[in-house]
Image (cartoon, rainbow, N blue to C red; front, top):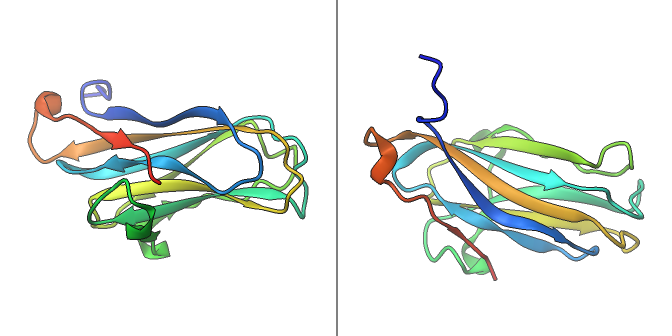
Length: 149
């Protein structure tokens, strides 16, 4: 059957916000009850981006206390399908980058990591898509997300 609508859940992790060259946590997703996750970062028009001033979305994971940044560690390359790439030219912004998470931690977070100081504007947001619910139908499973500080 070609029914994706009833087999995946989509959750906003971070509403698109104008960020200015400051590393920023975009939020997390709680994957409890699901076996598969895709995390996407929405990148708008970046002002001041170049080879020395760029943005790199970065994927993190945690087992406990999802809102606490110190509990997160970088996701190992073996636990990521695809890869986020740095945006270091105006021809690379205004895009959506996605990665698959196949690690075993409950919480998956994403952070906007900036290099340089001349990026003066750029709207960035994040979302997650999950599937492979432990119990079907997954209509009773609540997908949660939140902020990381």
